Length: 113
Length: 216
Ligand SMILES: Nc1nc2c(ncn2[C@@H]2O[C@H](COP(=O)(O)OP(=O)(O)O)[C@@H](O)[C@H]2O)c(=O)[nH]1
Ligand SMILES: [Mg+2]
Ligand SMILES: [Zn+2]
Image (cartoon, rainbow over all chains, first blue to last red; front, side, top):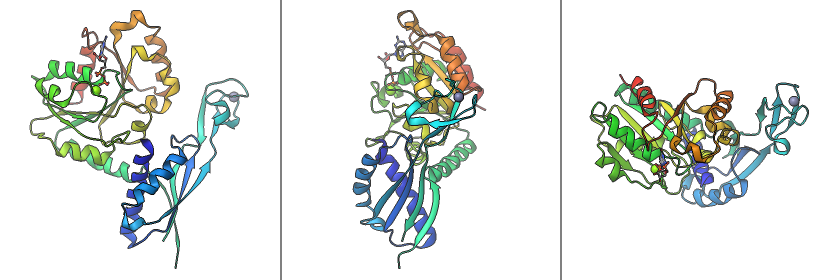
């Protein structure tokens, strides 16, 4: 399952920061998660509960998820549109010369220690 | 006192660093690592088997087998004349640099110049995790259809080479190599494309020459 691997990566990153800064316990973590980032928030939360149980550094650590809306840009008519509603095809001119501006983020925004 | 530390760190950061380190280490040891990715059943193990048979007299080859869907196991690959190891991914949907490193450390790579990682059969997750490979190769089999690049743009845009497999079945499927190549090049102008049949051997030469061109 993808989400479990992702949770391990989040925990690895946090352990690295904790070691650098001499942090002994992390109380909460905020993630910024793009709405087209290939991660399902509900699964992520389930995996989180399981994975933090194995990490003394993160016992009972809370997880907050901030969604980042997906926006695509059309190169032909130079407009922006909602990726979830229209996908790769521009709703304004029908072009497929489009690219994602934001929405695939997967970022650890902050931690509370 | 609770205190908030701003990180704004992408979760693949630490993996990207591990991958870069592994890539440099392997290069220093004279080892070229290729990350093979595809949907389950696209023909990774079959392509590897034929490649090993063709090249084993000239090149020392190792295979790190991470695809649980594999029909042919590491023992079969070894019987063809390569070093092979099956790694257990514990249900993970991709290999990362740390797992790749641990797998390689479990093999005797003394006389090896070319190593393959057969990644987990999946077109989404492996595209997001750098394994430390020197080249990323994707396989797309003819029965999967020439419109796959439209559905999995990230995978198609990040690979160095695309192998279109099972070309011996072209007459049974509505698959246009030209159309597929055009779609892929729009996402990835520099990509190498190799249509092959591991069944008949058609196209294997071009693929194997490309492999050899990376070896010292
Ligand atoms: N006709 C044909 N079948 C192939 C070819 N390559 C692989 N196959 C078949 O496709 C199936 C899956 O192949 P496999 O190598 O195990 O795929 P993997 O899951 O990507 O490792 C097997 O039944 C193979 O015999 C090919 O070039 N032509
Ligand atoms: Mg296989
Ligand atoms: Zn437009």
